[in-house]
Length: 206
Image (cartoon, rainbow, N blue to C red; front, side, top):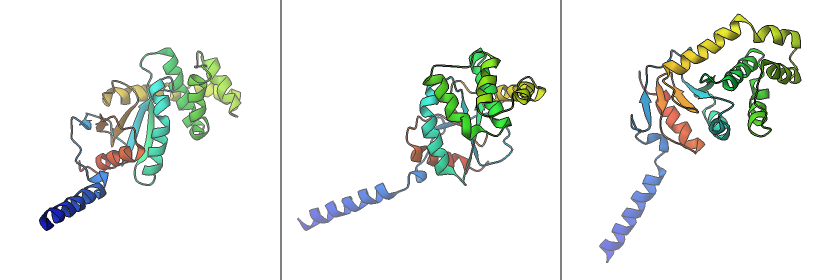
């Protein structure tokens, strides 16, 4: 009887200990949780790069998760983004929108607004005139904006987005690439769990 009670207590302690093991200590499996790709050279590490499109409904719904994860990773892993064009005119205009937001340093100001415009107000960008009107509303000078939209720098930025997408072997969005080489496969809907997986990959030795 005493042995049975002790066994139960021991089992309970072991169970409690197991629950206290941090998720970061979990073993992640290549091929299941992530894959290694040819990737892209990142200027700074550790970094997680989100490949996304403002036109993608999955990206829109996942954005709060990404933002919360970024807050958990603040000071540990940087979040950067690559907008994907997928050879679709509306998506390419959204690439331009992201480029302009970066160029004028107003990403934080307009990021959620662009998602809302497309998915809540049902007003995707259809022409460059739409882009122009939107950014003028955000306080950007119209003349400067017109020069920037058609600039060589803008074209180069879009080409760079496409090159990054190809090298990272992106087949769908949203996708997350850590340190330019680890593409996350696992479907994670919890910010804490996602941040732990990203930290694990960000700290993997090359």
